[in-house]
Length: 227
Length: 252
Image (cartoon, rainbow over all chains, first blue to last red; front, side, top):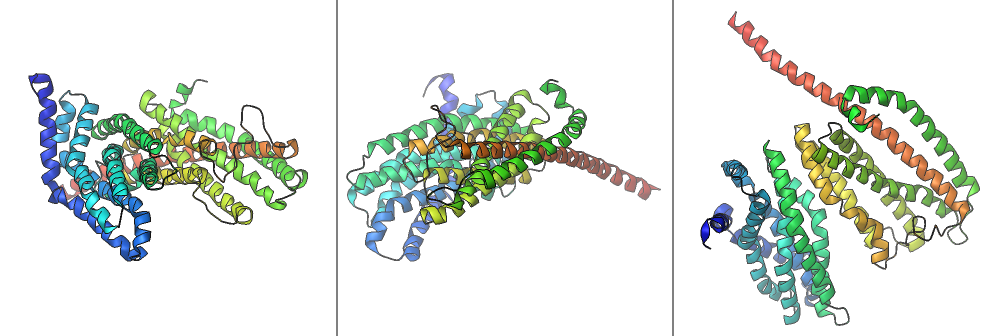
């Protein structure tokens, strides 16, 4: 990136990415949590490999949702604690764009590792190669939507101590459509007659919509939380 | 009287005090007529028998569940766009009422579903989206209770309310978009209602009664919220004065 206009965008992205990788035990904690959720499932439903193969896509999606929810409080909380949120608010940059950048770098630091870990965890769940690819692809497209929608909850609860549980309660209803279309696309890839593309395109649409709604709503919430 | 005149809480309180007796009387009258028609005029269904009467509670409750959220959405716009001082009082007052109506519609629906569908609950699109509405109501109430400052809580809740309003058209059209167990719309549709007048009229009267009941409870809850905020302000002022008095005593 060159020129003074793009300079701050790249700088902010790099700074946020470094922080999201390093803060709070690093990006691997999210992946570890993902692993823990997937490990617990066979104990809950029994180690029947056929059953696991059938519910595998859903398990991976729910694990990714939970891991994303747990990481969301880091999105704005640390910035508020050390005062950089006020600096960002006063910097005169478009706040919606800043929030979008923060979401993208947060996703690159915490969401992308989940997507990369998904094929490995799919082996535990006895998924076929086609299903494995489908789940990974839907997670790649869908997890940004979870982060972007979650930014709304993170911004609303930024001024609260111990707001993590409330954040999850607020975000889950909005995240349900993403989960529905993500799982149905992954399932459709395995079962033949149902088309894969229809739910997958819906999932893409949801991600694009949340890329607009998430930053706008989160920026509004941050502005109101500060004054 | 313009909406902006009601920005003065005292003026709102006088208006509410003048309106409430009439509203209560109208609600009681509508409920009397509606319940009489529902139980003695409307015939039993030839298949469902007397269980069809559940519909006279279920359908108005479901409508009001969405009506309350629409009220909250409009109030959220009032809070964020026009900064109307009573808008967030209205939204906060409507949330528990809407949650109660949503709960009633879910409960009566599942009681009706057991003998008719053979199950209390199915994960059909209409039921799921209404359940999401219920969770959203509870989340909003939790947000209001968590943030101490009422003004800031009102703004935060307004943003979440607007985001959650996406769910309203999903609930309305869920029976058309997805082919599911819940029957499609039979009253509000373009080519006119498809149910017989002997059932339609009691249903409409009951809907009117429920709406009036919502208005009564909503105005009462708004009045309570205004008074609660006044008490809070007085308490904070008292708390400010007391330490100063104590310090003056200690200095003597």
